[in-house]
Image (cartoon, rainbow, N blue to C red; front, side, top):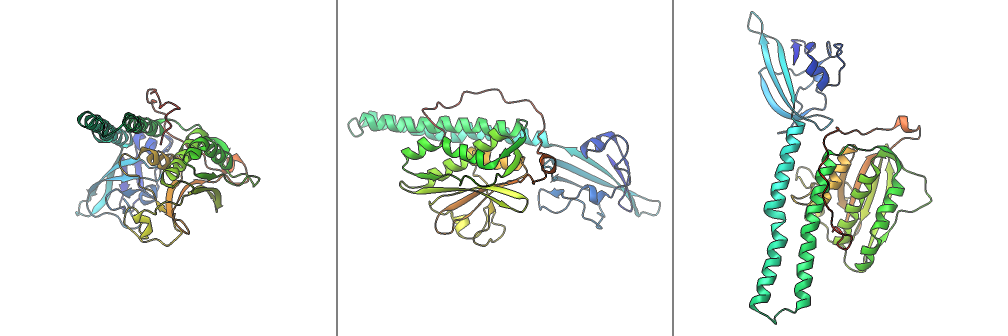
Length: 361
């Protein structure tokens, strides 16, 4: 709880407020501007600032919001009135609902997986088997087994990607200084056999250049880059090529994958997936994975947890460029770069993964 005076300064903050805003129990929040404390915290509904600078609310309010640390906060402000009826200050309470929100999202995702995503491939298997029974001879046994196998692989892959997505939400990041070029090269190498089967050439990032250092979890980042490569591979026709690059811009670095498949309508039309703004050719728009797309959802989540973002844009000729951007470690060494952190929470129980014979699509 925070007690705020009419000038917008904090007069008192209890221990819970100190902990919520990372203040030690010495009262360092006292005297701070409440608008400064809520800087970057926006309402979930309209993305407006919770407490705009110089614009104190005239009435009490309660809203759901998100801060710069991507926490889900419920903010409630109740005005206090003086003897003449004017507002003399506010009592502000903040409740961190991040864990509850995450649990609800995981429950919704699990229900969607069980009720919809996994039903589709299994329904297809049953339909194929029933068709074969009714019209024996219309489909040979090899085609039947091939369709059953492909749909079984799809179902197993969905389950595998879902488990990885949930783990990526909860697992504590094992951060270290890594070269993004090396992580990208390993991700490309892991896809070599599958790209050869699809007759698609995956061009590795050029070697021999200066290292591009970032701070992050190498295993999670490599898996995220692998999902981007598999997404591009699935969009590419036989005989096509996929280009991979590691690029630097300002204080950031990005791993980019360009394919030659059809450009999604939302990107082709120059409007981002949220439909909120027009973009110029070459600009990247945030990727909002479709429900059930746990592979791209995993990549977008890993990017956010490392302080970056997953974006997409129309390629120069035809196709799509997906870019996973990250904060870049500056030349001053490890101390000068960002150090992403994640809350330590209970890990998801281990689950068997899809066999190497059946790679994740």
